Length: 126
Image (tube, rainbow, N blue to C red):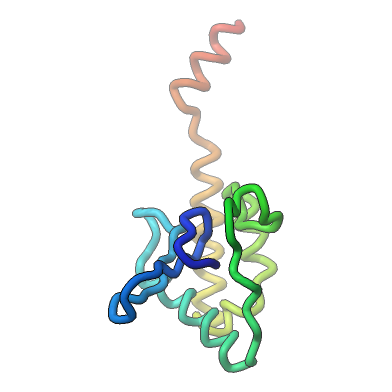
């Protein structure tokens, strides 16, 4: 997180007090806005109720400074979901189990599809 830093997942723009907000800069247009908001609020609630101190704000280019990040592949995201302990508490264990299974199934279907590009690459080698 940081102030006025567009290289971070959570940005707090500076400006007038009546326009203060937190910008979540990770989710794309394909994200479910209800699940996204529930996850963000759950994470905030978890930290507040346990009186966790946030890390200091990052300044400068976070791409060059921050080592640990979000998963960059669908498989890595599924592995992270399998290891999650906090979010299932907030979204409900049954929902979490079904949602994970659905995302794993989507990933399997996606990987079964051969794109036109893959077809042309491999057919040209024959």
